[in-house]
Amino acid sequence: MKDGLSSKEPDKKLAAVCGLYCEACSLYIATTEDPARLTALAKLFQLPEEEMRCYGCRSEKRGPYCRTCEMAPCAAERGIEFCGECAEYPCDTLKAFQAERPHRAELWEDLERIREVGYREWMAEKREHYSCPRCGTLNSAYDLKCRKCGEEPGCAFTAMHREKVEEALRIPPGGRKGGSGNSGKAEENQELP
Image 1 (spheres, rainbow, N blue to C red):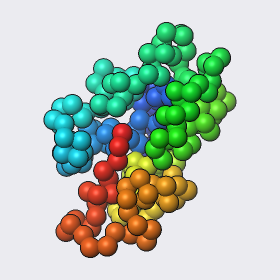
Image 2: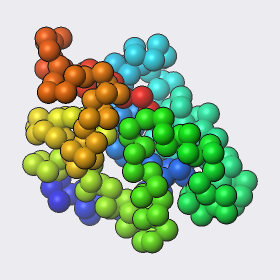
Image 3: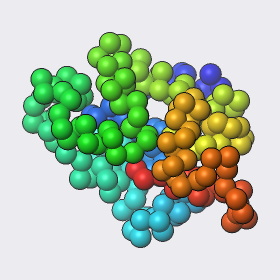
């Protein structure tokens, strides 16, 4: 893989209890490497930038949605690391969460994969899944084009789920008409965490 992503040691705080891969979250990307994206997301949600910052599910600093997450405290109370380990999996809370947004489309497969190979191997696979096939940049599920080189699709996830992602972003199939002078990049990246 390009950009050295395959050699990066997985950090468990970026493996969400629910089975999401935090490194491919728009808020995480905005917080750690894209200040303009953070500003745009803060404006979209009408929150101060500091409240939007997120360093992953298991970190001390989580974004607005993750701060109110029901799954993390539930898992902690039950003494489990991931929802897929629970005797009540999948619960109604997790089912509703999964159905809510397209970036959660692969949640069941991801939780199963974590059980099969462990979170470290799963994270390496997810890093590849969300990386640009041309330059290796890690993109979010809502980056229809690579945020670095412009390759379309930006990653395997958006290739597989493009229609649902476009619907969530309210982008008509085939692209955005008109423009804001920035090739639609800010609009394409206005994901809900």
